[in-house]
Image (cartoon, rainbow, N blue to C red):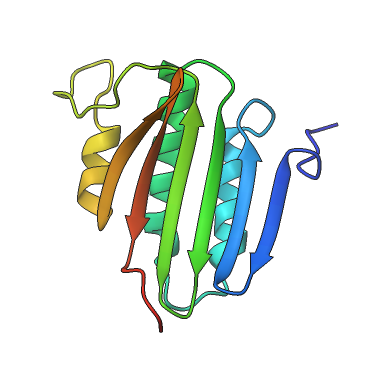
Length: 139
């Protein structure tokens, strides 16, 4: 039987939007992509495939290049058409755009092209790499 996402996903409905968190030690990248599509499909003002691509690139980078624990958080405000993806990991190594080669290097280039803005917040032994779509404001 597959992994139950009930134990690895936490959702929080707030007055200004929705926050959903996934444990990347339990949820596969395929499950993450499918969950983001399901969550965003009914929301008219958010580009679903761009959001899925941002989540996938940031989560994949954490899974491939960083240490556990790793998690993904999605904050959505539909009425304003705003979304923020945050991926936490326990690695102090910087997230940086690099020259693509046969081993990869295209992920943050895609994030840079798709996102309205993105960045890295360092804390303790790890970091949070984040990206946003749209502009945060009152819709």
